[in-house]
Length: 357
Ligand code: SF4
Image (cartoon, rainbow, N blue to C red):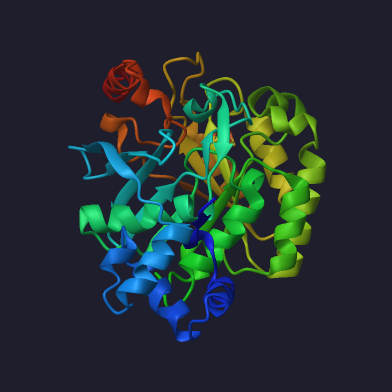
């Protein structure tokens, strides 16, 4: 069995080279090549030919291929559908902002969390991504688009904390000074609220931004929207978030997709304020990017809800929606576009109707 060399960190690479009887600086040379997107060992021209052959026999390099690339005519957002080594597909979105380019990456093939408004979970869960496959989305999007990436959000297909070890390794790799060297403060990790993993993450004391998909402040509504809420209710989640803030000093961002008649009532805004009392947090209001399969519709009370939060001292912003014409907005990423269905077209038509109304 060949080893996935790009998932190894610098220390592990050094041990591999030591076992091959090679000097330790080889680890750094190979790490640099891999993190520049080298597709084969033969490209590594500062290694001897026999060493390149030994490496090819023992290790493999992950290289995703572009299955489909869509560019938004509205805002230049680019959505990639990548085909992985085993034939599975994942999506990645590159968003252009004035302050730099952000990439939204996937961490799993499919998702098992079952959030009712999310396309990523509709076709079920297949497998977790390896650290190399998470990193490749940044590397190859940058190479293919020619756009430098300065910010990363782990908010694509999959629940990042359900793939905890690989995500932690990815963070280490992408942050490495000999690699892409993207600072933790430029990385946001989104979770639907896996409390045990949030507790573990707090112990890492990373300077990234934790985004918690809250979407409702009461258990009844949240359990209907996010089944994970039945495992640990809102109170437990909020106390975990409070402990996370106390440990890391990092303000948490609470995602809240406003849904017509479901979570946009004045009493829910009031409860949000009470839930956030004593904890510096930020509420990111999102107009629901509805998906064709779901009857849920975007709220018409966005401004009123935001005002109610702000009047009570809670910072609340409305997230800009990007990539609507290519179904690249939050919650619209899916892996099934590969399999010949017309689900993307259905979604885009759906979004066009949404934009008209
Ligand atoms: S919102 Fe995130 S956690 Fe929930 S189903 Fe979608 S990808 Fe999974």
